[in-house]
Image (cartoon, rainbow, N blue to C red):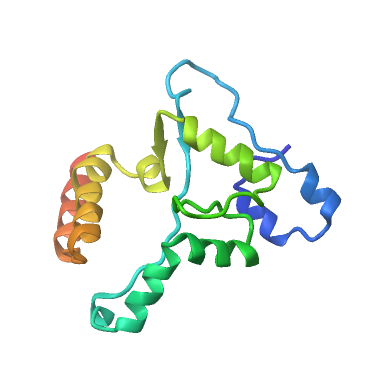
Length: 155
């Protein structure tokens, strides 16, 4: 047994080995956290300098659509399509188990949530990412200054 992400399926070409992969929640050690799952979030972004590039914006919009995610999954089925209009009928057993675990989790964390100071993740990064999604801007100097302050205080 080996604890690793479903991305490992990208490199497995033997169908028997691929069929032997499984997905299950990490065994509970304590009651706290059993209603949460670690679900890394990958995405495509566009630099602020490229913001006036209509083709780039159109490409990102396509990647966020069901058709775009289906096209990506046709080449790399280790990732889960998340768009509401994506075709999940071809999900493997591994995909289905992963999607079910994510759908049933009360809380979802991602690597930054796990690895950063809670004050940095919750009070700085989450609002910064939400702002970026809302208006496409992010103040990296402010993020860096807050990180320096928070991590210096934590030492």
